[in-house]
Image 1 (cartoon, rainbow, N blue to C red):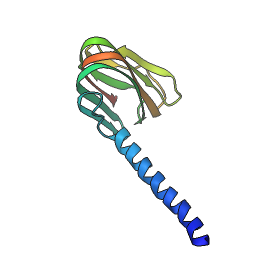
Image 2 (cartoon, one colour):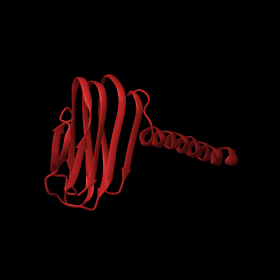
Image 3 (cartoon, rainbow, N blue to C red):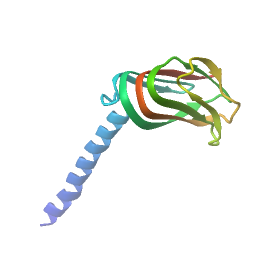
Image 4 (cartoon, helix red, strand yellow):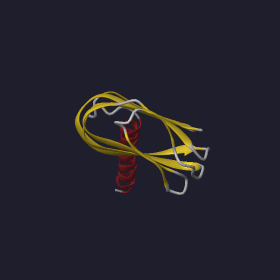
Length: 138
C-alpha cells in the first residue's frame, strides 16, 4: 500500500514533465496551425518572426526578449492581404516604445527605453498573407 502511494506522485510528476516539455516545444518551435514556415528567433539583442501562407488567422503572441540597448531597429517586410497585424515593443519597464502595423514595410526605430527584458507583442486579427519582422539592438 505504501509503495503504491509513493508511485502515484512519481507517475504524476512524469506526466506533468512530459506535458511541460511538449508545451515548451510547441511554444518555442513551429506552429503548423498558423501557416507555413513559422519561425521565431529569440536571442539576446535580436528577435525575428516569420510565417508564410497565413489564412484568416487571429492570435496574440507575446515574447520576453533580452535587449541590452535602450533602442531597437525594427525591419518590417510583410505582405498582408487581409486583416490586421500590429507589433508592439515594450521596454524593460513595460513602457510601449514601438507600435506599428506590419502593413508598413521598411526600417524603423523604436523610441528610447530602458534596457533589460523587453516584451514583443504581436496582435493578429483575421490575417492572411506573409509576416516577417526583425528587431535588433541599436
